[in-house]
Length: 316
Ligand code: HEM
Ligand SMILES: *[C@@H]1O[C@H](CO)[C@@H](O)[C@H](O)[C@H]1NC(C)=O
Ligand SMILES: *[C@@H]1O[C@H](CO)[C@@H](O)[C@H](O)[C@H]1NC(C)=O
Ligand SMILES: *[C@@H]1O[C@H](CO)[C@@H](O)[C@H](O)[C@H]1NC(C)=O
Image (spheres, rainbow, N blue to C red):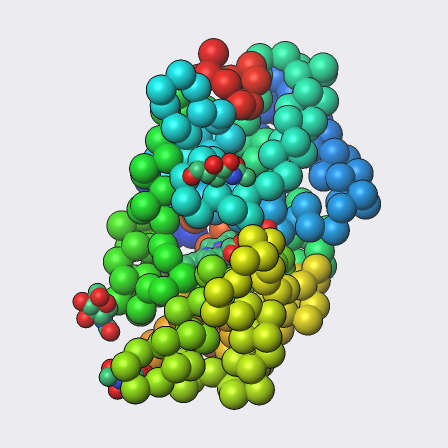
């Protein structure tokens, strides 16, 4: 048995075992066995009121894991002199924090002081994908919540203007491969983007081109009309794809047509390695879904904090 476990560890779920030896699928089996169902119910209810909730939860989990590991640091409020991650520059579209607060309350009502906010966020992100028609996966649990959250550290998040080498570096620093990069970027099948995130491509792109020539001209023209150069409307922007509440592989198809918003998405076509994967995922939703689930497990297993927070927005 031990041999089998070690072999599985070595071959299949290497990352789960090596990056975070405390995580396991049955972590709360004896202490809070219904935690998955409790979280799912809260996410479902929130979604039925607000269609933007799944995208928000998925992005929150990504931002959480990229800064200090998956430790709920993205959920903390600024306090005293400290400006927290959620008040860092890329926070414009971070929202739906209340869903995690509600799920935490529901979990605390049944098993107080047991389940971390980081685990609740990881579960909620999985539910968000499943409830949008995406793949499911088992979420390893046992993360601890961190005690530190600094706005300045959000500089370590990848920027939508990144090229392929910058993206590769950002992901590899976290043990994530180019395949993880391409698969996880498929998350941009959900949600909304503000003008500021793709401004660089539609106005003064470089000294010879006003618009990024890799963009389809009709698409660029539409974006320019939504986002004029001296755009004053803070909330202006557009949906990531026409089926922005469905977790399908449309995002890759759009990429191949020059209809994608970010330079960082377009960058996946600039080297053969990642370009091949974009083609593969554009052709097969199933291949995308399988790869996405595997990469989410890797992402969500990055090491985190020290405590089980009582309130997700405050350290104990
Ligand atoms: C590869 C590097 C990535 C970059 C540069 C990037 C950048 C961005 C940007 C700029 C936005 C729009 C923000 C706005 O203008 O409001 C966005 C939205 C989003 N991102 Fe990413 N992202 C990346 C990877 C990921 C990953 C790995 C995930 C999840 C697995 C993810 C999930 C999302 C979701 C769901 C949204 C929509 C959020 C909403 O509608 O509330 N992104 N991303
Ligand atoms: C985003 O951060 C800025 C400071 O950088 C802050 O003024 C603003 O309230 C934050 N927005 C949200 C939605 O938290
Ligand atoms: C990506 O951008 C960095 C920083 O601007 C630059 O040093 C690098 O050469 C660029 N890489 C590619 C492949 O364009
Ligand atoms: C502007 O960008 C295009 C497309 O990437 C490129 O072909 C061109 O050389 C760039 N011009 C300058 C001056 O950098």
